[in-house]
Length: 475
Ligand SMILES: Cc1cc2nc3c(=O)[nH]c(=O)nc-3n(C[C@H](O)[C@H](O)[C@H](O)COP(=O)(O)OP(=O)(O)OC[C@H]3O[C@@H](n4cnc5c(N)ncnc54)[C@H](O)[C@@H]3O)c2cc1C
Image: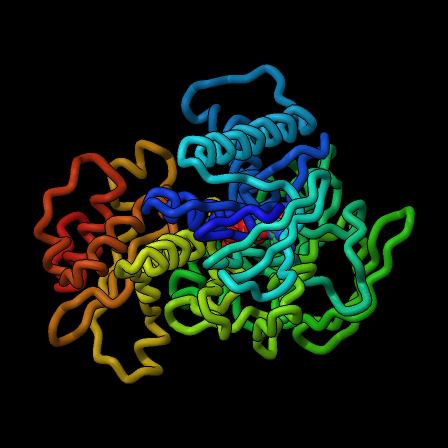
């Protein structure tokens, strides 16, 4: 017998599980279907983010950063270690424990909010009188009928044409987060967020890392001044980054992976790596959804086509997160999820795409919100810029972490903050103040007039705001 729900959510990543919880909070009967399994075949809700994305990458970044600090920075503090080694298996075990805590946490939240969870693949069967019939295939097949359907089926890593991931030598994020030994040499194709983060993990763990990037400029989406500063700092860490390359043949055998490419001068090159991470972007995942059974429209790139409110072409079918247009970020998926649940409940849902923060969790971290200087120039917007280096910040000195800067961009006439860009310690946390400021359409003077605790990294934010008016106090 079919089970009836007000809302059925397909996918329990940050888009899906948050949509399910918010819809349940609003008094609707909700089911959430997710097919991700752990190594014992049990459910592992949380999607890419929890299982092979945000959470495990940050766990390994933390472990490898501790190792790097112990090896290179402790002595300066007078902490002397007699011997130091990295137990990669333990580092991976810790990561697995954190993943499990998150999986279990989501199952607990489903219970707490009375969301019915189904472990298996969800697919459209047909449009039904009361909405849509959805089948769940898996260990316990089910048929559900939903008045509203929220699709949050996420994304998959993009492979190089003709080069499949074997997750042994040629790795996607999944394999790169599960290595149990540090490779001696590691190639990374793609110097985007994922490539830089995963490359950093294994460089800190002792691998010799070479990053090959097709674009001629480093981190094209990042403010050019911040990107140039970051590139300089990564070079100091011996993260070899080659820009403007064209990848040719990639072959894997017992000895490793051979990559043929032409460099920025057009000269042919060949490199052999123990392992290769391919991080050239992600593609929307609609596999097995049976979109065609109900006439769900995809766009030309395979994303589920949605309007500004995440409505698909079908009545009462919504889609959020990586499977729709916009940045592939967990917090973007969550914001869309909450907005959709509220719209289903007849309330007002809202996502401000202008204030979605971006973070790259390298060391130093890179974070930004709003417009870059190059975008403002291209748009012909008159602006004033203010920067403040962490070198002049007392807390950064005490931390021994003085690389980088905070940069403010404000409208030349109104002083409204148009963008904030940070490369430096704890940029991921510092950016929140800028997001709040921009949500409230604050001016740089507003931030400059707010009392910030001393000594704190956030004083660099205040000083950069002061610098817009050329009156930084400590630089
Ligand atoms: C290495 C890495 C690091 C990242 N780090 C960050 C970060 O630090 N910060 C950040 O904001 N973002 C980060 N991301 C991106 C982030 O993981 C995604 O943006 C986010 O997971 C998207 O959420 P989602 O709910 O749309 O999809 P997903 O998290 O991909 O979840 C989709 C879920 O749907 C399930 N599913 C798919 N089809 C079906 C079906 N037919 N039936 C049942 N279940 C189905 C999948 O199994 C999966 O569990 C990272 C990504 C990677 C790969």
